[in-house]
Image (cartoon, rainbow, N blue to C red; front, top):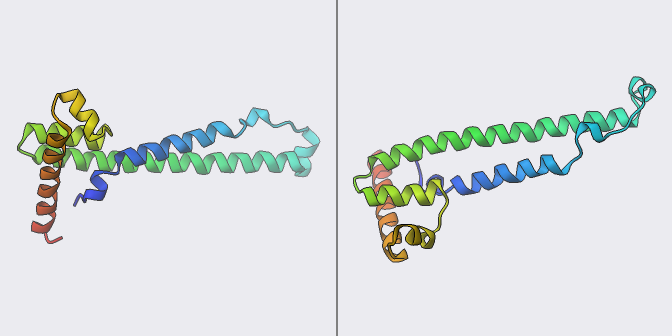
Length: 138
């Protein structure tokens, strides 16, 4: 069952993915390493650097894939929750805040509603989430 923490975690997962992608761009590409054929055969330092770089890039790429899978799964749960809401306004606000990552003030500007109205509708939706979790034994 979806929790409030999960509901609000999409923007942080996206930031984590962007940081990981940035790490990949910070380190040199494989073509940036210089090594001779004799060093490669003898297991010299250039070979070690190459091997380390390949392993590091695979690790970061694996972390990115894991975060994308987590993001996709969470988005599916959040959209199911949004679909369960009765108020169209609440649906719009929860999607804009939790999926798109807008602040309450930004949502207010985009929708011409006051930030207080946006917050009120958002927290009413979150209370419904808490009720659903409580009703289901959590």
